[in-house]
Image 1 (tube, rainbow, N blue to C red):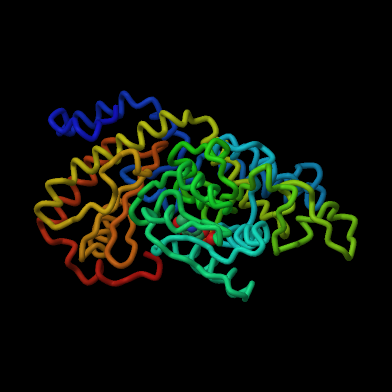
Image 2 (spheres, rainbow, N blue to C red):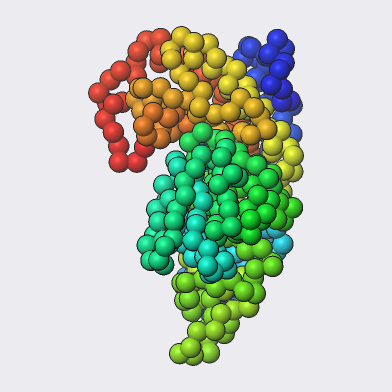
Length: 422
Ligand SMILES: Cc1ncc(COP(=O)(O)O)c(C=O)c1O
C-alpha cells in the first residue's frame, strides 16, 4: 500500500485509484467505530481526535447509572478508584511498556512537571536539562518552571534535535524531547537518543503526545526512563481527556515526585497527616481522578488496543506519502513548502507546509468542511489518523485546496480574522 520514497513513476494519480486504495485498506472498518458527519474530512486528529460511537453509550451509562444511581458507592462498586491504573495498563500495550509502568492522570503539562522534577531528584548534583528550541511550548515552559522552582544553578540547554546527542554530558540530569514534533511531524530516534542520554548517565523523558496511537512505540525496548502523553489526540479520548505518564520499572521504587497529593499515598483512606508514597506507579497520582473524562478515554484506548501497530504505521505512511505527492504541483504553483521530512523513516503521522497566507487558507478549507489546522507563524498542519482518514479524503482535500488557490477564495476578511484558538 505504501509508495516508497523512490517509486514516483508508479504513483497513482486519479480519483479512482484513491477509492481503490480505500477498498484494499485493512483498517477501513475502524472508521465505522467513529462519529463522522457525512461530507466532513477530518485531518485534525493530531489535535483533537473524533468521537468514538461507543463513548456516547459509555458516557450515558457512567452518568446515569454509575454517577446518577451509584453515587459515592461507585468508587468501589464500579472501580472508579482503579481507573487510572486500569486504563494505564491498557495503554501500556500500545506504547510497549509493562502494565504497572503506565497510569492515566492529570494533563500532559502537569505530568511533565511531576516527572521532570522527579528526574532532577534522581540525578542529584547534575545541573543541566537538555531539550530543543521549538519544542511544544508547554514542554519548554514547564522545564523552565522546574528550573525556577528548584532555584539553584539549573541550566536549560536548548539545541536542535539533530545536535542533542553531542550536548548531553556528565552534568546532564535530564534530556526531554517530543518524539514526533508538533509542527514538522519529524520523528526522532527514540532508541539512539535514549542510549546517548544513558551513556552520560542522564534520564531520558519522551513526550509522546503526537506518537501514541499514531506510530508504533516500544518504550521498554528503547529503555526510555520516563514519558508523558495526551489522551485527546490519536487516542480519541475527548476534549481535555486526562493524559498519561510512564515510569520505567527500575525507577519506580526510588522516584519521588513533588505533587504528593492523597491519591499518591500508600493508603489514602487511612487519612494520615503524614505522606507515605505508594510503592508503585500510583505514587505519581495527585488528586481525584476525573471519572467522566477517564471513562471516555478508556473507550478510545480500547479501540486503539485492537489495532495492529504495523498496519497502523503502513497506512499512516501511505496517507502521508500520497498526500505529499498530490501536493507537489501546488507547491510549485502556489508556494507551499513542505515542512515535514520526505524520509518516511523519520516522519510521524502528519504533514505540514509553510505558506505566508497559511491561516486564511486553512480557514477557507474549514469553510468547506475540510478540517486541518494552523500553527503560528505560518504552518498548515494535516494530521492523518489512520483509523478514520480515507485515501479519498486526500484526493478531495488537495482538489479543494487547488480550487481555493486558483480562485484566491482564501483572500477574504472572514478567513483572515484570527480566532482565539487556531
Ligand atoms: C507535544 C505536546 N505536549 C504537550 C501538550 C499539552 O498538553 P496539555 O494541554 O494536555 O497539558 C501538547 C498539546 O497539544 C502537545 O502537542
